Image (cartoon, rainbow, N blue to C red; front, side):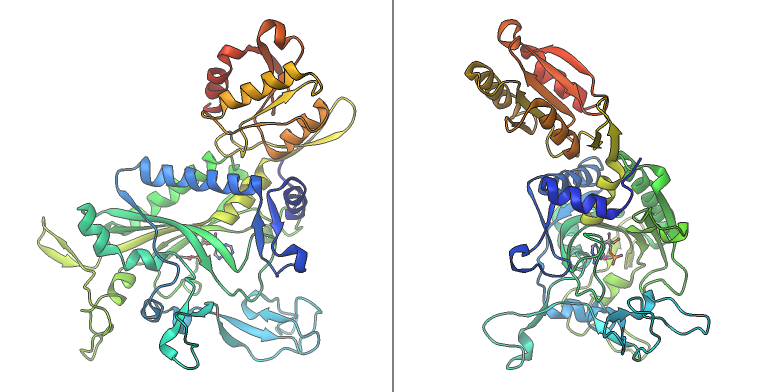
Amino acid sequence: MTAPNIETIVSLSKRRGFVYPASDIYGGLGSSWDYGPLGVELANNIKNSWWRWVVYERDDIEGLDSAIIQNRLVWKYSGHEDTFSDPLVDCRDCKTRLREDKLDTNDDGKLVCSNCGSTNLTESRPFNLMFRTTVGAASSDDDPSSLAYLRPETAQGIFTNFVNVLNTSRRKLPFGIAQIGKAFRNEVTPGNFIFRTREFEQMEIEYFCRPEDAPAIHQEWLDGFHEWIRSLGISDANIKDYEQTKEELAHYSQRTVDILYRFFPEREDESKQWDELMGIANRTDYDLRVHSKKPEDAEGKRINPDSTEDLSYFDPQTNERFYPYIIEPSTGVNRTLLAVMMDAYEERTNDKGEVRVILKLKPELAPIKAAVLPLAKNKPEIVETARKIKKDLQPAMRAVYDDTGGIGKLYARQDEIGTPFCVTVDHESLVDNAVTVRDRDTWEQERISVDQLKQYLTDRLSR
Ligand code: GAP
């Protein structure tokens, strides 16, 4: 079972502290979200899983953390200033602002407003999605050179650092650079909770290779990411590939495959249940060329007269100099978190006939690994023992102590936030120096000696 819809996750998130509406006490800010105590842990665990899999478990990737605000020229030569826009239309009847490319047409082939059904829409016009800001004390009206942008993707900071990383890490092709960080897009129609927001986080790899190797490496990354997504506990039944058509491909891309997740299982039309979780593009040598000082256009003019660096690669084995092709797997942290929560969601009826929610997160992703619960909080010896057990576990795993309710309520709360194990300290514990360990998924309980508890939990969590 997975969550029946995104709304279920919205309410669980708010109820338990995964994600809250941002600026809520001032009425919120459209499609901005804050990550609460559990959300920040889950997001960090997803990012750590990605980083470990990409940077530590491979031998051909270096990490990077580039600046959010870059020289404006980065966005000029990347093409974002001219082309990073959505086609915008306004409904003249209900005044809603809409993305033309997301609208349905009626029987006469006319675009229909998704809010009120009217066909009385304005002509489409491009709307640039980059957030503008100014650098320094001047306003961009007084001093146009102070204009800057918040990055709309992390990728460009990797391209501009290609030579830095190549030289300092003494790498040879093929190799990649990985980066996790915030990106900002002034989306025309954000929505569906954290699926499309104006501030979000990306995990991107730019993998540099010889042009002739690019198609096979593209396929390897696609297969690899299916494995990684599976390792997060997401079921294959809710994942599928979408090969972008020639018309849909970005101007720099030779091939892009999107990996889709079933974010909208409630929709009757099966084809509308899916949307993009991540994309894997073959960006060719476009990026390193446009940021390089040397390449020329058909008339012999430098395509980039502002760059001070040539980002070509010299292959000492073949004595060739060329611009590497780039394979780019790009994943959204927030969409991954949403997919992980939806896929882990389960409802189960207990023997009293009550419906309980269980978030069957992989232990690696669970915000809390073990909750230590005293059976009687008015018994100082039990409380003291439970607190001591929590303290002993903490260096090895994220553990919490909780005595804010009866044991049934505490179990239900931990099930709902995905804690794999509850450790209960009872009267008997004071005599036999053992505790009850309850498994989130089976609700089975086992008596474990306190001396062996840390090792027992560590083993079970790593399965
Ligand atoms: N560098 C390539 C790039 O940025 P993209 O398809 O525009 O490609 C990559 O974005 C991923 O970033 C998407 O698959 C999605 O997971 C995430 N993403 C993009 N826009 C987003 C938004 N407005 N809100 C949340 N996530 C977003």
